[in-house]
Amino acid sequence: MLRKWQTYLTTHLAGIDPLGNGYAAREKVFKAYMNYFKAPPDDRSHLLKDHHRVLTEAGISETDYAKQAGIFTIASFPNSAPTLYWTIYELFSRPGILAEVRREVEEQAVSRSREHVF
Image (cartoon, rainbow, N blue to C red):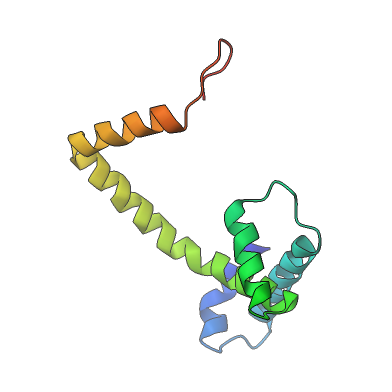
């Protein structure tokens, strides 16, 4: 669903979508988000919970919240790949910082048991 919208995104944003495929795909994404937000899982991230709370307190409707989430999802893809690439490049270019990051991840994020590591 999201991938289909991405396929039509360029023509959709340019206003060249004579068959309405981009609009139809966008509506499917928005409806999926609206359904998700009607009964979100209890284990969703704290970021998502707080984001929803702040927007609700600001008077943003559930429909607008779902649409904003759909747009954010699309916008985050082209930005996250280059950011991740350059972050990894910089980390591996600086052995001292890489060692510090590895040590912090080991201390804060990795748990060990006899059967499982991580």
